[in-house]
Length: 166
Image 1 (cartoon, rainbow, N blue to C red):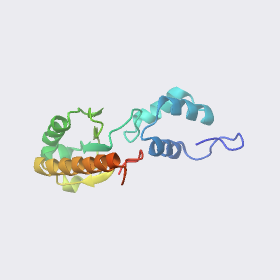
Image 2 (cartoon, rainbow, N blue to C red):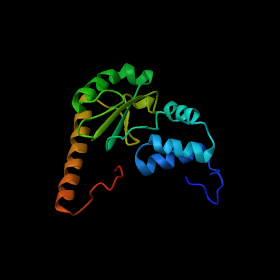
Image 3 (cartoon, one colour):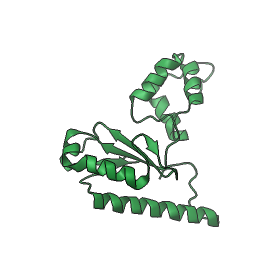
């Protein structure tokens, strides 16, 4: 992202934003200001770009980012029921992160899995033909994975997070 030899980064803005989010997990206000200065883009315009695209986040995210598809085919195939179940089960509403920091929940327009509705993404990985039972099993698996990571970190061995999402 940084200027080289005092020159503006010539990569497309979206690539710069993706790189910053991949590195930090979100795009902080500080990073937005830095990009705005380096790219000579008004901060308001840059903020508008980041808030327009649902894949960019301006707040720290949970380890697992769940994106519920809100397309008509998903909604008509019990997508709203799954959304309500997820909100209750993880203790966070749409656009929020659970208190334990494990899950962030979002609703997006379409994830391109209309033929296998209802669908959702977990850290970008599609999960299709979802039911309440399948969501329960998925959340259980994710929580168990998290517990294993926590146990390994406490013992001082194995994967300890290192700031990256699985």
